[in-house]
Length: 186
Image (cartoon, rainbow, N blue to C red):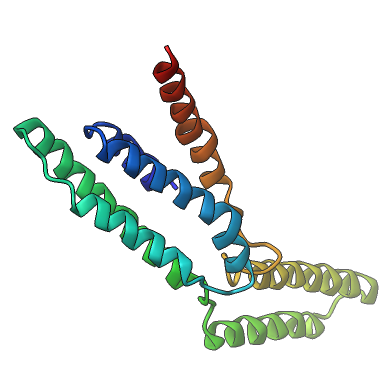
């Protein structure tokens, strides 16, 4: 999300009509992530439409021909930021199916069973032993629950939400769009 925001700011420095077209495409792409990509991602799906939108943005961006040295410098920074956005997008998409390896789960569960089992080897009062075992089992159960919930950070009930994209949309893209529209009216 932050790379989209930075790219949006970089695009703002380009001359018209490229600026307006690229801003519109970024606004639509960010809204598409919030409204369509993220819900699909929560289901473990990757939408085919998102790469098409990115490719259209790339085509328009690569089609820009800077006329001055200043435009060349700003354009170079815009391309660098675009490539950074693409890199982060690929990492996010690659994380959709990501999960802890089965070996990690096996080690965790075997370790949990051994830890609880060790409490039965203690020669202490039965009530204290039951309480100690119950507390340890509860703690291990909570750790396993959190691990299961965070096992796939972009899918499932504890998945991250598109809050950062919404903030960029509301506080940067829509705000700047409204300011530019207001300036165009005066």
